[in-house]
Image (cartoon, rainbow, N blue to C red; front, side, top):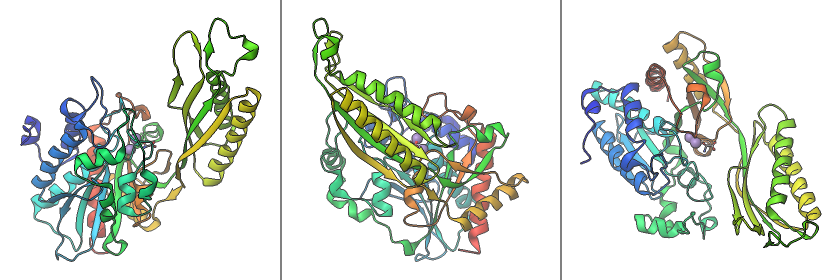
Length: 424
Ligand code: HGY
Ligand code: MN
Ligand code: MN
């Protein structure tokens, strides 16, 4: 039994407790980072978080299990044992040096909503399951949403072979050591016929709600994204004796390519973004001309067509620069997520819930960030609720939310469920 935080013992279900719990999970044994939050899938901090979240789920009257793909699932039974299920979830993992609320807030808000109904002795004609997904960020292994795809379908397990993290730990080894053999992942697959829908509350990670002074918003679609790994191979050499005219400097080539990437995205339509977030240089010492470079590319847009057009232009830049600088290039596609529209009728209900709670018409917006919901849409109708976050900051320790906004989102989720009571 993990010692209880004094605040939790006193507080009742609601937004404030969800925020307090997120803050608690943002450090100490719940993070693998020294002085920063880093909760990679299957890491010590991740597993410790699973332990205490499981207790919070049990306190909320849920049965608790982990599926064959490591997802944490709390189940609040409906009026009958064979009732279909409404899923509420988000992800437990975090980026390196991330914020306390990305993902985790959606999981803990789901628990708060169920705990509220449990305290009231209210059951529905459907069960409610709160899900903590394992690797939405892909912050440990180069693919993302592996556990979400295991549940929703579309996971190609053979495509995971050989994936390793920065320490060289192979995915299959990490899973076997955690007691979740990859061969068993197929057991996590859910049947669409059992699932009424999937809803996800998440911080906006953007500036719109704050700019319009709104506590919450309703997501209409989630942007398309492509992730690549680009490998450039030139020729390492002595920094003092290798003539500039003879160099095949992989880092200089990468630098020119990155400026090209930035130019293409900057010149494109609203919503097109491209990012190089990871760069590795070999041998990476002061007095050697870089021979090899690996960098990531993350390309996103509101539509597949804009995303793909930008990707094609970027490939041309990589080809041209590599040829002119006589470096080899290899481009590996790591992720291809098409744009996902949220389900129109569930979205209407979420918008109605927002209006009933706030008294204002719901602000609808597209999500530039990716979410588990874009995978869960393969299994069931999805709807997302955005929560204002300060200056839109996310994937950064300065990520922050207002408790009153989270209380509003808590009320909206309760209202959504009650609106669906008679309809599902
Ligand atoms: O990258 C994303 O959009 C998400 O935070 N994984
Ligand atoms: Mn994120
Ligand atoms: Mn997230």
